[in-house]
Amino acid sequence: MVDRIEHWQITKPVTRSKGGLVASQSRIAAEAGAEVLAEGGNAIDAAVATAFALTVTEPWMSGIGGIGSMIVHVAKDKKTYAVDYGPIAARGLDPKRYPLSGKPGPADLFGWPGVLDDRNVHGYESIAVPGSVAGLGLVHNRFGKLPWKKVVAPAIRLARKGLRVDWWTTLQIAAEAADLRRDPVARKTYMPGDLPPVTTTTVTPPYLDLGPLAQTLERLQTAGWEDYYKGDVAQAIAKDLKAGGSPIRAEDLAAYSARLVEPITVERNGVVLHTMSGLFAGPTFRAAFSNIPTKLGTKIGAKAFAAYAAALSKAYADRLTKMGAEDVKGKGSTTHLATVDADGNMVSLTNTLLSRFGSRSVLPTTGILMNNGMMWFDPVPGKPNSIEAGKRPLTNMCPVIGTRNGKGWFAIGGSGGRKILPAILQICSFISDFGMTLEEAFHQPRIDVSAPDKATADWRLDAKTIAAVSKVVPTTAVEAAAYPGNFANPIAVMRNGKTNEGMTNVTLPAASVAMG
Image 1 (cartoon, helix red, strand yellow):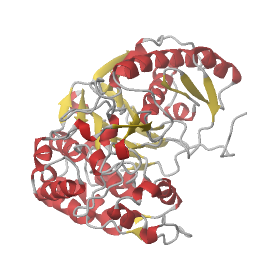
Image 2: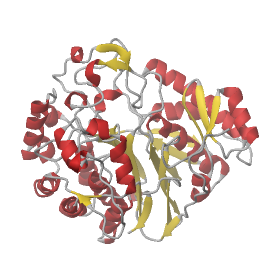
Image 3: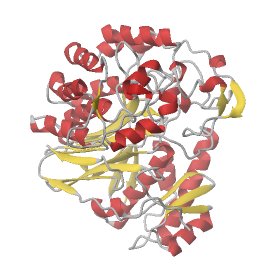
Image 4: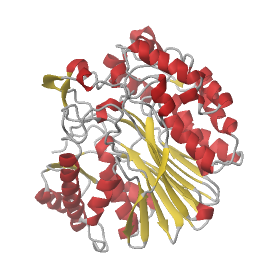
């Protein structure tokens, strides 16, 4: 019997437009990106504007204190690029500062052994060098159309107003209240009165004051994104980090650079799937697809899901043996957005703080909520992914763009830690192998196999399918609820001819598509 929380059937209609679209986990942020499209910006401008806006509207998931990756398709060149702005450990970091405690680690995404004082999970020593601003700046410089000032403007306006308090905001803050209390600035910002904020009306909801964040964004707007790494903002960040006990220094910020890299590609029935290479989920994505037949039948069912389960189980066994450790059900802080414009340019962008609210530390001078990227490292010494100064850890992001005949067809990605890859792989298969529409693919129940020895299946799948998956790996039937999230949260846009379409995860309440 499935232990269900929600007793309703939820659907979302696809959004269609001849113009540009922005799909995001936050409606308000999507509208900020759509505003930039309406002003003449392209899909890249819209993605950058949306990502900056998410710093304000969805701080538990991402922000300018985070890290990320993206895939960009430039229509006129028929060229698809990968952008790496992932985390890096401080060059002066001492791995001995993260000794094993001899206790289990907190149930926070990964099953790592515990570290003394949970230093890799929360607080200033859990922070990795942030790359989000560098990544957004790089793609805007290379592919953007509008001036930088216009692209950042919507986020500044939102930051001046503050964080809107609705029931979803209350839920996110309440879920992390114990850790947010540890940091005096985070406590003051997100829990005025030392309690999670609540609202009793949606007519005039309250807003939380985000302190100096608006001024920080204004500085980046006028001085340029480079100021985050080599200017006044960089100096303020470095000063606060040092005072809080972080090993990150101004030199680490100055040395950071986002980079364009060659994407990994997978060909499926005339579709080329482009995703991240290197220390992202891309290599595992490709490995899993290599073990899934291209001919799975004409109708989705037991055969296909058994094939997904077998391929994902094997791929994760290789990934976690060589690069990581066993996963546990945990709480993640990642957001995804996808954009497309009338010319066919596309962006699939994943940005993250890693845990919900990241390090749960807000820098007092700049108001920036920082990531806890050090948790991506295995705290056990001597492993491929162990903590080391100046090193990049293994991450779970899996943005994908699918092309046909060199033209962008769809851009997809998601949030949800290690659950991201299985979700994106299945939806890509639904579309490329079974010819599903975007709307059909997003409403199709899925499985999750993000560890080699266990699986979960949406209880709405038929008994034959769940039994077939169970023969491959032990399987538990669960519900696809808004909270807690048993499955990843996919976000996508698609281009059919000159008509663009957008979809967001059906059960995610704030996720929306906006038209530019």
